[in-house]
Image (cartoon, rainbow, N blue to C red; front, side, top):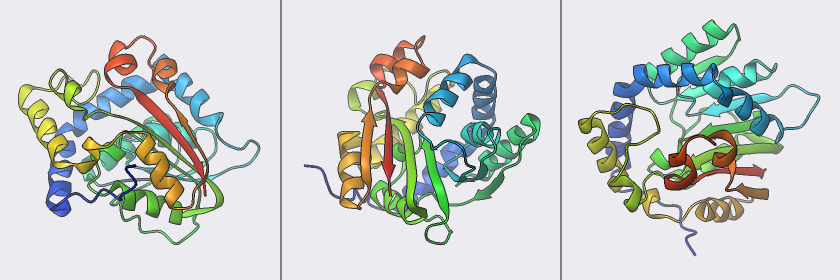
Length: 247
């Protein structure tokens, strides 16, 4: 079974390349997430996330790889105390803009998802979307995310097997991005550099979290069916999944 931590060689160089890629995409990514905030998907994501959280109390939340702030805006709008982190300054700028336009408060910081600079047991919830597949050392990331969770805290991770070889030859990195040929090719080159691209997911994620001591690990292979019912690519080519675990 694939229980190793998945250390990508030359991870610092790969991380720099990933950061440069997302910096180039920041403007278009902001527009993509802005349209999502004003679409039916927003309510679908509300349902998905809130149904997995305890009711009746405010949570201290870490949105890892927050991008331009979609989850941060959503959760802050429900009274949660949100901190969003992202490696890319351009993404953080977009997140601050999105929160301002939505009229919600959240704290955004430039930070490495594999090395979150917070004390042990700081957060009630760690949440992430479309991040794990970009990480050179996702096992280390999971270890750190559990470290900063309080005992009994919840980890929610939503991701997809974007890098599967049979997908990479047909499509870009994410639905509706309008990527040009050069950016698509760069994304595929990054796929090839990341060890996680060769793992079977979310089974690998489940095993990794179990090895790190997480409890009540649940995987959901039908998130894409519920959130993206109109989009064939997320239902067939990109099996989108959710993971919920408790520290």
